[in-house]
Length: 147
Image 1 (cartoon, rainbow, N blue to C red):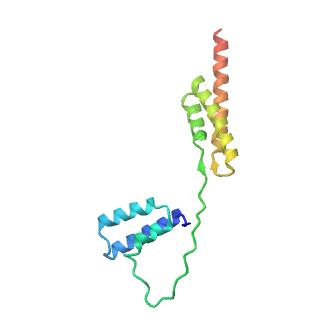
Image 2: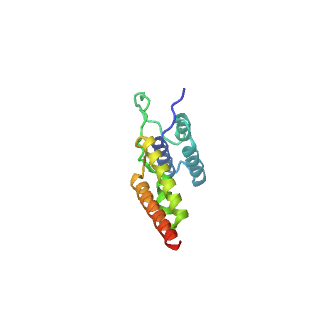
Image 3: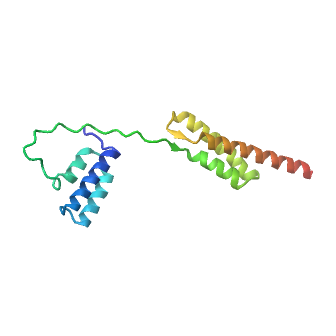
């Protein structure tokens, strides 16, 4: 079973390809093709094949042990429903946007809670909920006042 390539592995390969290009080992078209292949590679062996003919071998170097895989901790992304909640609640303050703000806010909070720290945006979701409920309250008061 082959080791899957990480984002850091891909970036390292692209840097090696750029260095080889600056040394005159690759022309610009081949560099572009190999960079695209590096970013779409799934396995480390694919990345190795992209650089094996342009990276000079070390002279009289002892056999190298396989490189340890590099693991990169990804930063949590902002929940899309949290963003949609605040945008809908602010952009359409009355009933339609307020309803969407409330619905999206609750969905966002549920997803953020279930994600276990993989997503952020709790404050945005709560702000969308507050503005959404406030908009619905203003709309309800306006309807009651017109009756």
